[in-house]
Amino acid sequence: MSSLRCLAAALVLLLQALPSTAHAADAALIEALRTGGYVLYFRHAQTDWTQSDRSKDAGWASCAPARMRQLSEAGRETARQVGDALRRLKIPVGQVLASEFCRTQETARLLGLGDVAVTRALINESHADHAGGTAALRDAAKRLMATPPPKGTNTVLVAHGNVFMLVSDRRPVEAGAAVLRPDGRGGFEVVAHVGPEEWIRLAREQ
Figure 1 (spheres, rainbow, N blue to C red):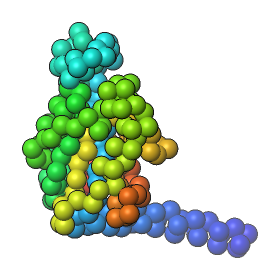
Figure 2: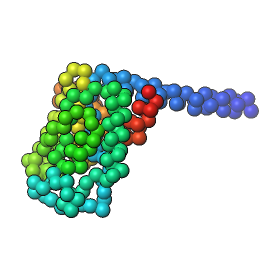
Figure 3: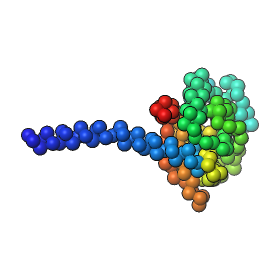
Figure 4: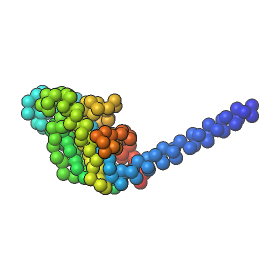
C-alpha cells in the first residue's frame, strides 16, 4: 500500500511540473524569436468554403468570391488578432512575403507586421505549372524558408498548407505558423508549430 501511495505522490508531482515546463518552453521560444533569425511560415487564415478556386490563369490573385476562395470574416478577425499578438510579444519582423493569391495577401496585410511583397515562389501547388512545375515550386519555396533573415529580425512568409507540405511532413493550421530556423547551409529546422489561439494566449500571458 505504501508503494502505491508513493507512486500516486510521484504522479501528482509530475502533473504539477508539466504546466511550468510548458511555460518555460513557451518563454524560451518567445525569447528566441525576439532575438531574430527565424522564418515564420504562416498558412493563410480561415476561408469561406462555400466558395471555390475557379481561375487557373492569372486570375488566381482575384479577390472576387465568384472566381477564387476568399477569407471568411472569422478568418479576417483571426489574422488581425494574431498580428496583434505578435506585436504585443515584441517579435521583430523584417521582410513579409506572400503568395499571389488574394487570401494570402489579405492575411499578410491583416497581420499588420510590415509592407507585404508578393512572390510566385509561394504560389498554391494547384498552380505550380505557373512556377515551373511542382519540383521548381518546392525548390523556390524551400530557398525562402532556408534564407536567414537580416540580423535581429524574423522573416514572415504567408502562403498555403500544400506548399509547406512539399518540403515538410506537417502543414500549419489555418492562421498558424511553422517556426523555422535556417541553418545557413540551404536547410532549416522546424522548431515549433504555433496555432492562432496559441499566439493569442502567449500574448495574453505576457
